[in-house]
Length: 233
Image (cartoon, rainbow, N blue to C red; front, side):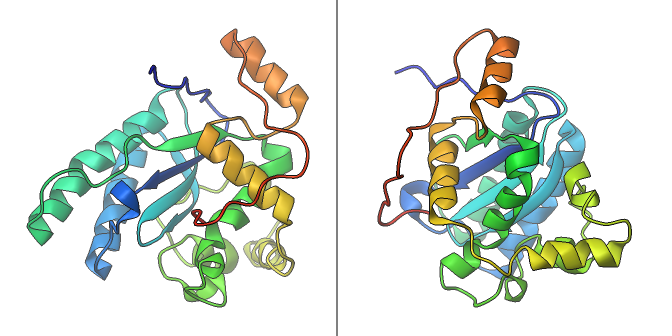
């Protein structure tokens, strides 16, 4: 079966996801998270990817990234894998694959979904019942985006910067966005688009992408989304 075509475009944000093989852990110790972040920083710098948000969960990772060229995100994940997989295998004396195939990802309409997707990513540990508040989880971008903690990996998006003129006001507005829960239909739409590779946005946004790539991108199913058990957060 041929691989599904990706619709990444320069300057268009992408919600990307990669999961451990058979949903098994890919991080076993604090040093493993730190190693992944080092490799992420190096790859993002090398391939011109602007990382806006991330979360490293026990058996999967989420990134919100804007590429500067169509293939940048694929190169990013390939580069991380070439360093992180040997690191894990050597550290824990294991062999074989670590990740469940290629990463998954979808482009998203910035104005409508960018900040929603940031919150979706940083709320993963809360939805997984690992912590009660995203600020309690160490391995995400929340501390930087919500409280201004230094993080050399992150590059703020224009929509995040537009939340306020000062760092303090911007962070306060961003934190306030976590006071209300994301609607169930939005959660399910984000998940469906991520795992199918469908662009997340209005029909006009998808039509614009189709005009650029010269083909159809697919449209998410209309109506009430189906709730699936045993899903990733």
